[in-house]
Length: 182
Image (cartoon, rainbow, N blue to C red; front, side, top):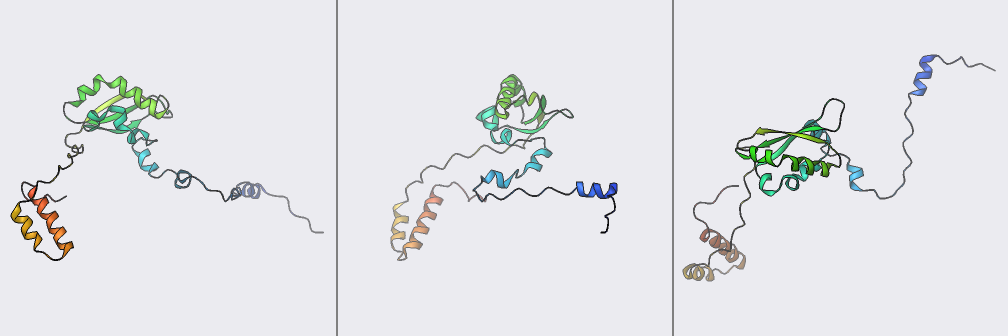
């Protein structure tokens, strides 16, 4: 009977480094969040946001009025720590002094949303013209069409063409200048 030679340290290391078998399949439905994982996680980590909650709920943290003029830039921690970090906020113009007045509330709300004491202090940076403009108010109802316009629309036989031209006439009647390209 042939004898097997004793295992060398290199062979022992190779056998120990073999990966474990994958978990057994369960064939049960799983949540989408489990399947997708951290979509965009690397991009958020690059700017110090390990959790998206701070970005997603920024309006809730600072309020609607401030959220239009400021945004979080990064959350930076000391090396090896995951709490007591510094939250950098980009703010426009004269909003920075106003944010200093509500700094304790911002820190408290951010920590409440994150679930632990992640933010200990805030730094403010100027960001002139970087913020998104406030949303435009929804357009009001179009003004009524003139009788001359309505009478010319009645002469058109094709109902789809008539509807399209009527909506164009209403849009032009409600505008004050050339159309804006978006």
